[in-house]
Length: 174
Image (cartoon, rainbow, N blue to C red; front, side, top):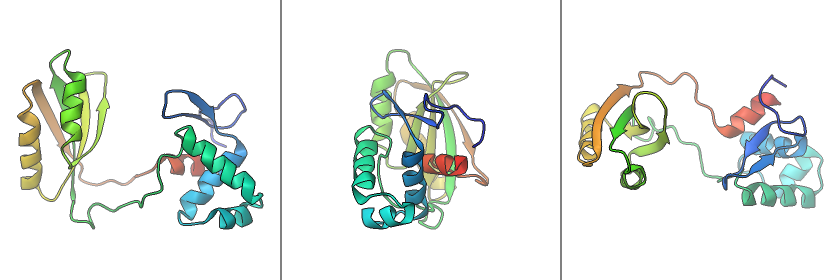
């Protein structure tokens, strides 16, 4: 394993979606890695691949879902192939006391993929997918129409040579 933060059991540590802590053990990691490699695998197939009892795989998956470690099984998309070839990262400076309201407004804009509260210059970092630069401009105009957004700075992604998910992190630790 690489030298990354470890949980109490010596394995990788993950935070549950509810803000609690859930330590991923070797069995959980093996299940997650197998799902990453074969996302359409059934519980029976995972059981066979990992030489684990079907009940163990089922119970572990239920627990990982319940604790917020596994948040979905949807397909990974290549947004460029789906017609959204422009990726941008916009830093927003916002009026104090309006964070939650602004985040809710941003959540309603379909082209916004992620919103992060950040340190340093600016308050929010927003990841945007757009069909073209003109489409990006339209999205940025919608964002700038939010009264409490006082300033924005946008960078375009020219290329994305590294794209990983949380499951990839665990697979890389394997």
